[in-house]
Length: 220
Image 1 (spheres, rainbow, N blue to C red):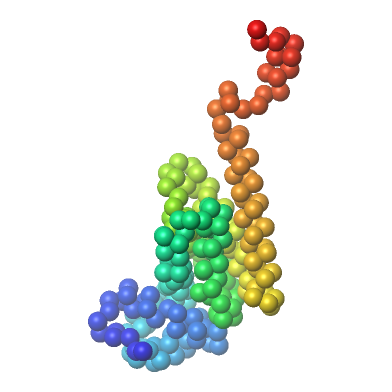
Image 2 (image 1 turned 45 degrees about the horizontal axis):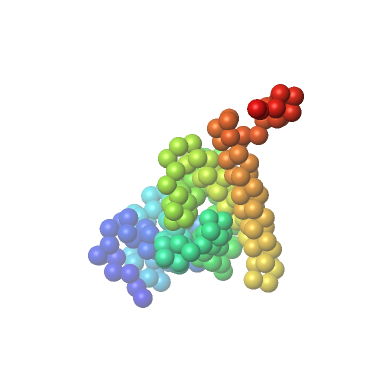
């Protein structure tokens, strides 16, 4: 189905055309050739398409990531997440993202190489943060204190590491990626438990000194 480019703003066109550019990037990389191929396939004037991506490759990649955000949200509406535990929600959300990328591993590999370039590192970090934020918000997180930042930083690192496994995973059904993701989420959940214990009020935490003191001077 061709895009009605005349009815779309450049922001809307940027997002709508991104998945087709990702498909073309499997063969042509994140290049003008991929943009032209996607535009022609969707009935968009290539010159108009170029206006939607003034930053060229990084703008195309950022738009693709935004389209993955939308696909993730569509795959897991709030009612389907509500019955899950937090770790299950996070795992499901990451897996939904991977499902939207599946079949475009070569495009992902090329995107990761571009994002790792020194001139793109800052923007890439912001994109990773935004993806983590989108996942936590869908998972129902409402933290506004420092937990807001630590949760997103941890999830961004988990997602980046999982992508690195996913892109080269040739196991049946991406089983190796699923196992890796499960382990990383379990590690983070254990960390969260320890952190919660450490942050409990001092009078609620176990104190060896207080315990020994009570042995010596029993409470009457």
